[in-house]
Length: 307
Image 1 (spheres, rainbow, N blue to C red):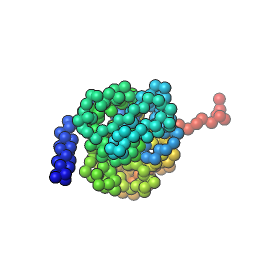
Image 2 (image 1 turned 60 degrees about the vertical axis):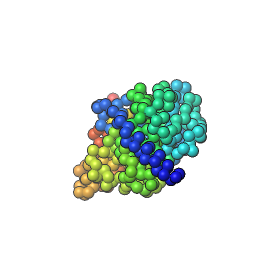
Image 3 (image 1 turned 135 degrees about the vertical axis):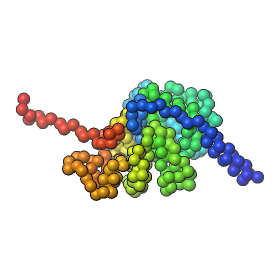
């Protein structure tokens, strides 16, 4: 009897999710990034990485003015009342106004009462865990719309590990059976970074080649792979790397050039001319998502230049 009840509850939840009307995203001028606000996409295990937390605090409006909502849904129901992640954000940023948000109930996620903290939030932080839990709980709900509105007001959406992958439009490693299944039973992310698939824990877990075939077959998508304690900041269509390790860019053109063993650029500073199917960026480097090219750093003028 209990088994039949559990199956019924699962089917009811799946039907409710399927009936959710899609959140409408207005057409804009950006190819991948948000029209307003910023994304902070973190590869996991951020710990006390100062550069990442300082950037989050800055983008949220500074520690005196920031109002943060920490979404713990990816960690499972045990995190519903656990203030651990709230305390971590407070400790690492100095921000005092931090609120926990958690549900696995679509009805609750569609209630005005539940989204009240998001109405005044300047930043949202998605913790790690399993990204499909976030999709099951918030996709196409009033809460999803409220997340979008944080960006529209100029705020920041941040997330680490599962909280990074959920920000893409295609949900990578979203299967309920485990993260080793790359394209699984959940494939729709929250879409803050449009036309994208995002992987995390990249170098730590030897995942560098996992996105290659997928992006080869999906030229409209950009692939991002982030190592631990490393993040990208995305403002409109400009991406910048912060943190301790590397970010990998998976672009269809780079993969095709690699397949054909044909590199068109002689300039060694053109990272998109990689002889492999992807290329690395490190802290401080920037990338143009609209035009799919690395933004070269301006060379410093010599002090001995003639006046």
